[in-house]
Image (cartoon, rainbow, N blue to C red; front, side, top):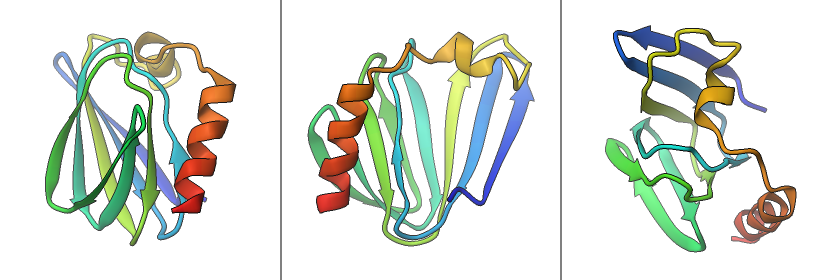
Length: 116
């Protein structure tokens, strides 16, 4: 269970702040544009298009556009996704930034992260 999500908006920039409890698997999605992901605290295992990596905070990663990605929190984590966008509506932001999901690919990624 994700304990907390907060949306932050500024001129042309959006940041999604997510607090993730240890052991949680988040199957992400593909974004229409490349963006930065900042691991502010904790440790994760990230899977990006089949490539697995362990990352410890503090760390800044570039997630390229159209790369399917998922995260497994190894500890309690604070994670930020930073996007360039003019959208300032929390109810519309996912529609602006996210590619429609592929449930088969997401399920395969979830199984892969849970097995590790």
